[in-house]
Amino acid sequence: MCKKRKRQTIMFALLIAALALVSTLRLAASSKQVAQPLPSVPVLSRIYLDPGHGGFDFGAVGKLPNGDDLAEKDLVLNIALTCGEQLARAGHEVLFSRMGEERLTNTTAADEVRARRASAKEQAADLIVSVHANAYAGEGRAYGARVYYNPTSPVSRVVAERIAAAITRHTGAYIGRECRTVADGTYYMVGDESMPAVLIELGFLSDERECALLGEGWYRTALATAIAEGVGDRDVETF
Ligand SMILES: [Zn+2]
Image 1 (cartoon, helix red, strand yellow):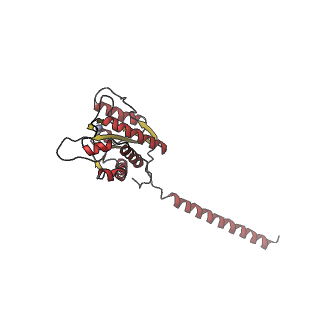
Image 2 (cartoon, rainbow, N blue to C red):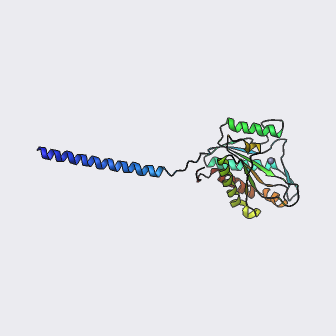
């Protein structure tokens, strides 16, 4: 091989190497662009479901159209269990404060709530979902679901809004009202800022019409599905 030809060959090899380098860099740049827009959403994979009350604590009690009582403790347990099944099917790890009548304490309601909160923390849950039902003894009609959250926790707020929107989607047509979110961190279950938490008041057992709906299996399934959708929705913007 003459010297000139050899130099040409080297130049050609260098050119090929340079082109390869440029295309590799371009590929790296474009794959970086693809990766960048992913939002930094915390993964709420381990969910602590807390059906309120239980055991000797019945919570609120409503009257069904057939004259039977509907106790809050039974209603919320039924809905939390259905919701838990759906969340587990969607790949979440689901923990329960109770799956029946068992309690963590045998003393006051405040002690029980404190113990449940501590157990969620101990088991490193990503989110507490506490489920309750309301009662109202005052003037006028009080009805509809509400989702409480601590305003100092942005994650709790976003999850509360998602759940409220899903409840409205699933039940708004039957109850005739939107599910509202309430920024109130005074409930102990949502008050601790160290763990995202929401508290859902499913509706008013004191309202004849709403109590009748809460007594229906299909309405309970709609509420359970809405909660699972709100918790599990990963298509969210950044917090
Ligand atoms: Zn309650």
